[in-house]
Image 1 (cartoon, rainbow, N blue to C red):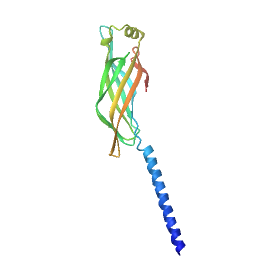
Image 2 (cartoon, rainbow, N blue to C red; image 1 turned 30 degrees about the horizontal axis):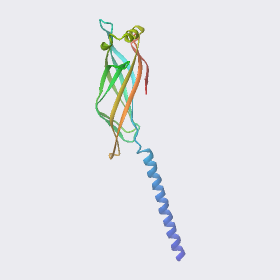
Image 3 (tube, one colour; image 1 turned 120 degrees about the vertical axis):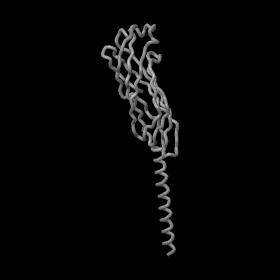
Image 4 (cartoon, one colour; image 1 turned 60 degrees about the vertical axis):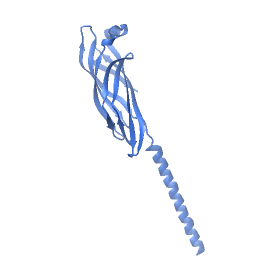
Length: 183
């Protein structure tokens, strides 16, 4: 009888130890996968040229209509503030557009359209720009940063930012965007 009680206590202790090990493993897996916060990705999904015109000084101007994507791979939503994206020609800003504050849901991609008014009036004296216009292709780049917070389980908030750097070629003859690449 005494041995039976000892055996059942050992069995109970073994079950408790197994339960503790199991719970520790679950918490560890949860902490390493779900609770890890990554920076969202900000990209151009597509871009088209609209309202193309050339002024008296032969400088082109147009609207660049872009689809912007914010890919949130986290298990919590990404809430971002007002920010802006800039279009550059050889490091000189030629267009800017605002991104209004918003939210990308957990493990989803938010898509929205932004229109840039691109004007090259500040580059009229740049000889490289004149050569590019004559060649029919303008190489543009874009930069932007989306700052905000990822909120996990309505308790944990981590500051994160999504950065974008894209390059594209604008074909002035066909008025089309070519070779759009984002990092």
